[in-house]
Image (cartoon, rainbow, N blue to C red):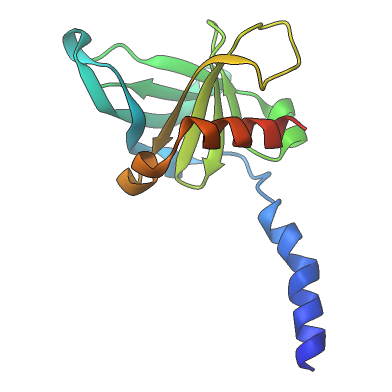
Length: 152
């Protein structure tokens, strides 16, 4: 019986791990801590950003801002890419991508060449998490590893 249970766990674990094809929800909303500080109010560096997932006209968007009074950056939800990759993918007009890392974290990256399908070649990246501990533990190499994994 124990052996049967072990086999079931081994068989079902990948299904559970890779079944993140659910559309994003308002559970995204909140304050996120950054791996690397970014510009905030008056060009001062900030280690937190505000995220809000909402409907904007016909599009579902992720709105990211350094503060409630700051100009936000809008990322449009990419349904087809999200379904193909099994994670939520957001994109904005200036070429920034935002990927879900886990249920409370995101990775933002800027591809070096917008035309290229090689996402592992990027010029900038950052990590955002509701967990300060995760944000502080993240490294640029872990981001490269994650982008490589999802782009395969």
